[in-house]
Structures are given as C-alpha cells and as structure tokens.
Image (cartoon, rainbow, N blue to C red):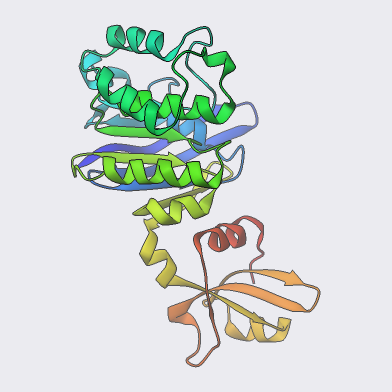
Length: 281
C-alpha cells in the first residue's frame, strides 16, 4: 500500500510547468526526492500536503485525494518545510501548548524528549534560535503526533554533519514501524544515500527516474576515456557524457557496456549530475 502518491501531477506557474509527475511513497519506505532548485520538488510536496491545487493529475495521501483528507487524517502527516513555520515569539513550552490544540494525538513528553536530544533551550523564544535549531524544533514537532507519513522538505538544511547524522538516526528509528513512510527532499545527496529505499529525480519539472536506490547503483557506472572511446561504446550504452580538458567521462548502463570495459562506481549524486549537465551521444 502507498501512504502517498502523485499520478500525472501537473501545475503551471508562469513559464514553469510541473509536467505529469508520477511516483509513489510506499508503506515502510523512505523516498528521497532530488533535483536542482526550481525543478519542482517543493511544488510537488505542497500539492501532496493540499497547500497547492494541481491543474491536472492527482495527489493522494492514504488512498484519498489530498484536498479531501479529514482533520484526523491530516494529523497523521508530519511536515517540515524549508522555511521555519513555528511562531517566532513562542518558547518550546508555548509551542507544545499550541500543538496540543492542533493535534488530538499530541505527545508532549515525546516532544520534550526530542528537544533534549537536540539540545534545544526551553526558555528561549524561536526567534532566538539559530536556523539549525529552528529546523530541529520543527522536526521534533513532526515526530510528536503519531504521524504515519513524514513529508520533509530540506529538513537538514543549515545543520552541521553531526546534527545531520543525529536526524538521520532518529528518522531510522521512526521507520522501525513498517506502516510509516518518509518523503524527504534534500540537496545533501549523501544523506539520502544513507537513509532512502527509493530515489526520485526531477529535472525541469519532469521525472527523470523513480527507482530503488540499490537498483540505480547497479544500473549505472562511470567510464572515463577519450571522445573516441566514449563514442565507441554506442548510444545504447551511454546515458550521458561530460567533456573534460583531458578526455571525457560518461554515465553508462552497465548491462550495455562491452565486457571488460573499465568502469567506476556511480553514486546517486553522480547520476544526478550526468542527467542534469551531461550531453547525449
């Protein structure tokens, strides 16, 4: 079962079009959503949260159109958007009091346990928090009302590597309940490689691929050589290439490369780079 999915999702803003975007967020899975700034990640996420109405296609959560969810169903979604969404004039205790009225299943003890893990000062107001501390507070809120689906838009932005690892560990613990799911967008692709089961790559408003992370790493590899050697591999083998000062590098399909070709491992960030900036034979 899918906790969330978009099917043929289309949204137009001026000269930008989110173009028939489709992918799913299955139960028990973490889906990483990657792409450059302006590629359509935040618009897709806002459609899933019912904050933006699509021009075409569907955005569904728990098997229902996002805009038709009941209050109780909406309470099962934990969201952290890129900007700080907590009132700046409130302390953590006051934030908890507000959330108790927003969420019928609010767990104050859980919230303050996360606050202590994140070393958040209880007496300071949100406006006195650093950007990273505000992100941690928003994540603590999202994790404290029995969410089945977490939707996280750049949740580790502004955090140092130690804090990012701490967040990833907490998300890993959250996923021990296999009825839960996470959709997480991030520019820090190395974080997604550690956590995600699936990777969805959007470029220019279109989905380039939506595949299992491990399958992507098996599917693609990097070849380095001269322009002639890259051309000799053929169009079936070369997904994209990038010219260099001393030759070329190419993202290739492992299964299509001739036997014995010297190949290097391709990480998720490599694959994204070649599809974004590379050229086609």
